[in-house]
Length: 558
Ligand code: ATP
Ligand code: MG
Image (cartoon, rainbow, N blue to C red; front, side, top):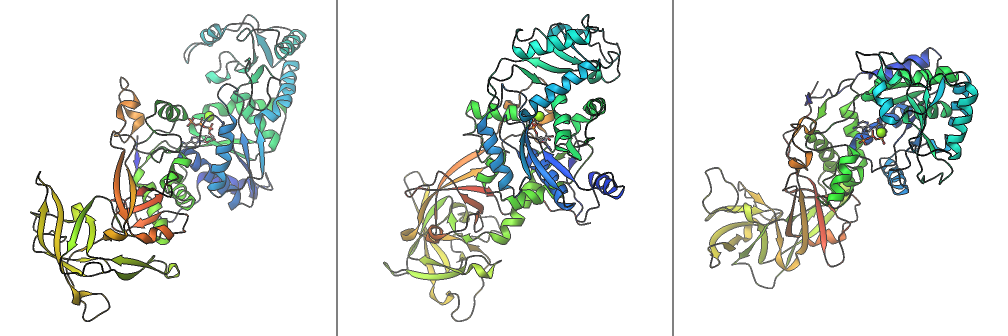
């Protein structure tokens, strides 16, 4: 699959916008009504977010509206838990739906329309088994064989269909099919099934029904009932379009039209709800909202903002051909947003102790630093400094290469917002591992006093006496393979799970973190963006890394 790595900054109208503008100019429609139609059988993922941004975005752009419609025609897999999470996620993304509908609200109307089709001689009850129906459908090169029940009379069909509804037949005993063309070049037009018998409890209609409409029969008609002007779906539905149009034409109802765009694929992840559900059930991730998941709730817990996801959807654009978007574009979008808004603090992820031998014991000095250099309104924070500090283990090297500007034996660095220190000695444990670095400081190098002295390296730090113990969860891509749709057939997608997708560290943050009131991720300087996790408690802070600070990604300038 083609990996999209460059993006135009300024964009032209996408093809759906072109269609809408034409429809409005021609007077075909006076206003635009779109819908987002999730099946409540799982949590929404970033692919759905793309569809949400597109549907709501188009309506907004043209002064129209968008409905939220739950496509709940399959009672077996659907659940209220999912309905609630979907509503929460759409709202969180920043969109308001004009109305909330359920395909199941239309069951009675759909039933009546099915009777109408029977009366017009355009539908029949078929007693063939599922297998027989499949076999007799033929192949692309071979016409199908008409069912022996295809020529039943209208009366008999009406009677049988009603008795299907009344529960007189077993599951699988009968289906209702459209009577179209058993040799049609489009296999979906070879007498598609409209209704099947399912004895299952439905999360909304309870046990009222034991026949349920198929997606193809329910979807277009639901659009039509709501008077949806532009019904946007993903590319794989293009072969369904003739059927979509056939029902609307034969029933002579509001002419909604379907348009297809390429579904969003992202590198290093999977997007099918079935696979995501398996990851949850297998326990590889902790839940649908595990910060490694491509779900909206996972991204939220990871520290993604609605703004960053909307920016991503906009950058991705609307394609007519399948492609994969590089995960680093999503990461670029969240950095773009958080760089402007995130408060800054220092945190040491992998600490080693540093003692300043010539700094007085029992003394604490306070340094002031902007909370966010990008936003003067954010004010200042106070950072305590003392004789014992934590620094990042990899900010010290005993035998560094030439251009190493961080701390080394005999070398100097500036402690961010504070003094210049010089490494004088190293203390090791019995295994030879470094457990403490001994430095001296230059009292003349205090910022804001005297002449500013420059040294090449600056490192971050936290005062031991004031440090706040913090669990830091570092996430990496969920899978090791970029294009998960192209893995070898003999392999399972679970063979490519990244065993290092979560690394937990015991670190320290500066105390100002305790008074942070922003509801979004913060920047731990030099380390990346982190958000407080819902598992944090009074006793234990937990921060999730949203994304590191740097990336190879840069959008191509046009
Ligand atoms: P999945 O295959 O992940 O289970 P789905 O298509 O069955 O997804 P639905 O709940 O039916 O999920 O999807 C609701 C809407 O979101 C549909 O209009 C669908 O086309 C759209 N959608 C789903 N996945 C993507 C994607 N990856 N990119 C863009 N739109 C998507
Ligand atoms: Mg679906």
